[in-house]
Image (cartoon, rainbow, N blue to C red; front, side, top):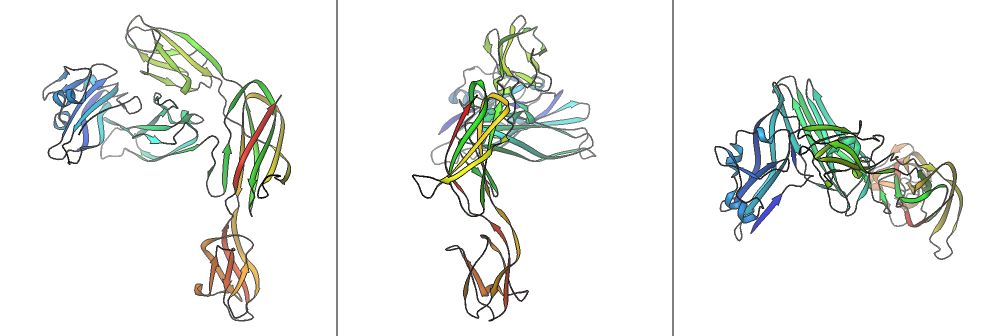
Length: 467
């Protein structure tokens, strides 16, 4: 079985800032009787192979599995490659062709890394993660966190590329810029740099954590769950919100309503940035404030290009294009983050069609009007700890007791006259939420435990907005 794999915008390697290249490392397993061939290209140029002495263009540029297996480089050739200058300061695409006979284990490629130096005695390495799927549809990214440590002159720069609803990938952007954007998946890239090896410099990236939600779908963690409606653009400023939440209330649970009103972002179409001169140039957007990177489209002579970088702090575009070509930009600016305003809980009453449901009614009138609106229901699954909850006197035989809250498994300590009794003398049954205790007749029973309320269930949400 043969196959062809090529990088996308999201999985390209980056050698931005590299002044020299020190080598290419391919971490792969190639079982006997199988084959793996590779080719590289920089900044959308021609596909090249390393033939053992020099980099040369592939004869077949419209790569197929068969052509690359015939013309490409082996892993050994790539790892021995020199003359890496053409790969520096560029977005690197890689093509891999794999060949596996019947019944054989396919080659496995874990990573491909390009190492280099950004200055005297400085070693840099760019590492790109595989795509991390968030959901089957584009979801809101609420926050992203990284855990890293550096010492001396060590540095770590993390960027990310987001996959849109249509499957396309964004350019890599600073990690902070992916907050409040939507994505189906994300790819992270870390550029790690130190000046001295095995010395005082170090750079270690331990983890990256991304928090996201799904519009219209509840995502619960212990304690609080939030359900957010689809964001609507009603074009005219709205200042009043009304909401109805149907839910199945349970013990130790609560529910709250919030509304968000935002101003409309401003759309800019085909803003003329300037004329390219064939070198790397910097252009400033006319409206750099709160630009939404996912809306940015850069065109060269009217054709969209992914080969640019964007500094969200300054609104600066960096791009290399053929001399004389026109550079334009389309984008949205003044894109505000959501600010959730608490709504007034006006009423709670039984549902007329389902006796198990209760209707919760919320209302809000605000001066912070805006046409971009959404509603959030926040459902709280209560939790806490109890010490010395009084149960009464023991009977000398197994006796059921009802606790004030639902205890966590393994978190119960029963005491008789202030001293813990053996765990074999009591057990908790989820059926009926009953604690059964056998203790010396007349002894005073108390119990300590951590508790977690039952998970509340929301049946439906309706929100109405007006001016």
